[in-house]
Length: 367
Image 1 (spheres, rainbow, N blue to C red):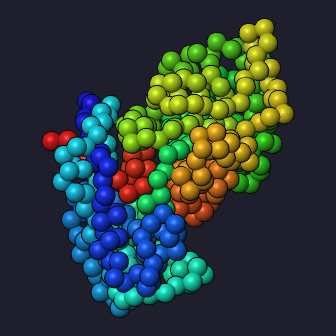
Image 2: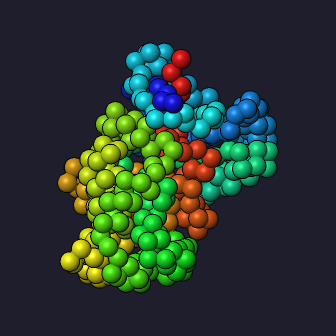
Image 3: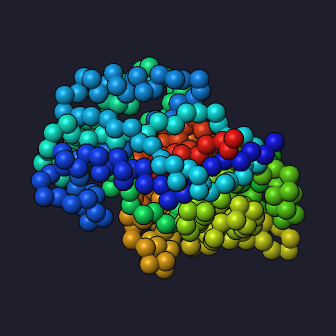
């Protein structure tokens, strides 16, 4: 059953919240794109599974213990809501409530970069622990700098396997060779960061030697399922001006299908070597590993005339960390712990629409 969702258009919600606390910002500091990264202000987004109607109370309980910090509710203005982008989703998205707060000092505060980074780390640990102790695994807690929240992001790069789609395509190929367990074991080692991606990729591909190439089309037709929220998320990002890119350590035929089906702007993946109608089991020297993913992100941003502060990257594995590290906001999607702890935000309780929430947007069912 398809559903429609409203994405507020040209919302000034975060800017308005920031303006409301201008009196506690460092004296003489203007609020503009050149000063955002130095402000002692943080954006907090909490996504809770419904029914949870006590998130505001929990936030207040935490701030009541913090003499130096205040939380300001962030709301979209009526014009933005009335002029919302209407996005269709193939199926209902996760039933969650979205709560947004601006965390600012209670009095005028000067902070060095080092002190601000230390404060961000402490706040992240405290608020995350507070909410998870009350809501367990039924909430995602994202804490970003106000700079990250207000930068004009215009490039979104996504991993494919277990991110845009639910499968690992090389494992799907392995099923046809009856070597799924062997390939899955190597894949898991790479995702955990125990072996480098290039080595794991070459080992897995070698096991596919002799497989009939016709299975590629069969897998695409019958075994690829998109992650919940994938279509709606890409549509929403494109509606607000993002250039969307798929960057995969998988294979071109699958990446082409996924990117074109979702309406993404471009895709990058590894060539699938085929000879006489069979997979050769060979790989070229230009494997798209983690470093290559990061290089593609940087090259794409430069091509579009964008700075890295305008880039968002989303993935689930250790080989996605390099591209997330060079982006302004790196989002882990249903990722392994080693990945979640090294990114700016981690989506765990929703589909891919959680990326929109992490970036500070609301995405509400259209009544």
